[in-house]
Length: 97
Picture (cartoon, rainbow, N blue to C red):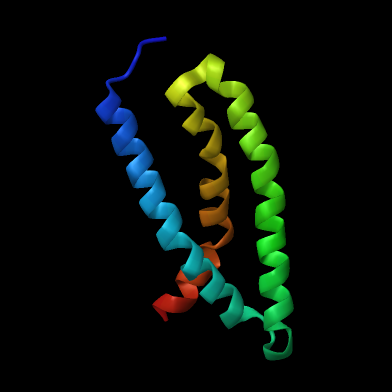
């Protein structure tokens, strides 16, 4: 595997970090908006719990894969955001109206 210049890795990680930080409050706001008013707290708690539960094995997968894939390990993370965008596509149609 060809080594990438350090600036490519830094740029990739910076863009990913900025995206993750901006995504979290938006996702929480959508969940709070769509949940029944009397269940907003429970919905947000479950959503955060599932997020942390998914994060734990992913950290393990990334740590295990790093010696083999190096920077390319980030591609293992791609299905998560893609599936999330696909699942949230109905909200774009609602906000467009």
